[in-house]
Image (cartoon, rainbow, N blue to C red):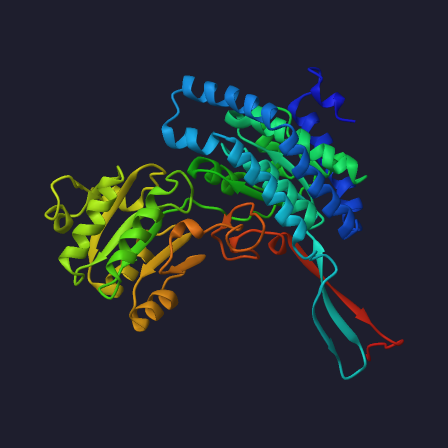
Length: 429
């Protein structure tokens, strides 16, 4: 079935049109697939990924070598790199998705009208979901598995930098579909790195794509927003803030700030700006800054904080709007929680913000007055992840306000319909 797609005689438009047609047909089958079938496929996918770990690692080495040759930075390489541990985590993610409740067919509301009509709101699949992502090969499994559990067909367009890694992972997914007697086209990987394929997906592939989910940097998101002719789950950059209030516990503040920035600097949930209450004890301020520097974090600070440590470099206006995705953080002193709220609302990408505080009034103000998708209290921003939220995995963090917001997991990949039961009622003229 997929062989013609490798033919050099086919144009990108023809290749993509075929993917769309096959995905639409697969979506119809998936909409009535049993929970047992979907779970069987997911568990088989997980086993297959472990079984071909060596092949996936070999494919990943090709991608990494090409990325290094192209001069990609360390943060990019980290997002691209796979290890045995990371591959095992990918398999565990698929197993976790299998344990989730099947949302399809679930009645989320039910009521009866005075005329006897019984109305139910029932969850349904979205249909065909196009996922466009960049250097993270794990998204291939996460997105494919989540879409499958929610009864959707997926068309995956990974970045050219992770093409070999994603292709190896995709082979394991297809075998899982086969073992559960589900259509192979339920999860398709675009077989070309030609950027024109993205344009075709954004046009909707002749009305076969129902939703687009972009997962990447500014340039990708900007292109999706400019060109998309189908609904989009917005996923903007992660300019995440950590605010340390005057009431914060010192040791907690040090540990959370360092983890939020340095655990993995290349993910969208990594902290990019540190805000310190001007009334915070100077000893605590120094301890936080010194801990970051000791962890090999470069700090770009305002004048007030630069006076506390000579290693802090002066920040420019652009630093407050920068997603570094590396071991750099901007730092600023603010006038309490109100100053933090004002700064965040001006510079945030509405992804994830954290407050470290013991004062309940400060926490309440922060939670109520900041309009980001995720708000953390006394916890690292690195928990901004569907797996950590108990969703099994995620396609991304939606920063818009329509339909899905925050981690996009199984529940967020569904729509609904109204089912109305009557006994012959007719509507009066």
